[in-house]
Length: 89
Figure 1 (cartoon, one colour):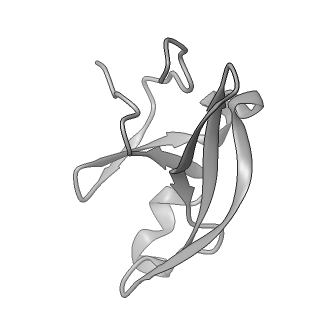
Figure 2 (cartoon, one colour):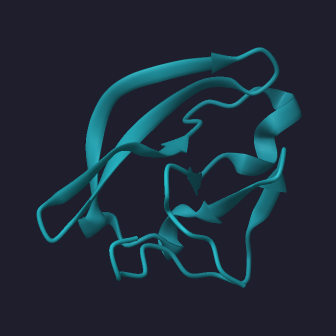
């Protein structure tokens, strides 16, 4: 986003057409905590990060499930992106 690679991995999970990157593949220096939370009926409660690059903030552009349900346990320790964060193969 904004000309920077935020995450890079060949080892990821795809759930509902979203790509979840392992947390260790994400450059955390581009993330700041957000106060936003949403609830998915089958995955659980999502928490969000803002993506910040060169002073520009993309609010709530990354999310993760700290304690996903058993049905979504494969995305524990993973972060997904949206809101203009481009995913390339």
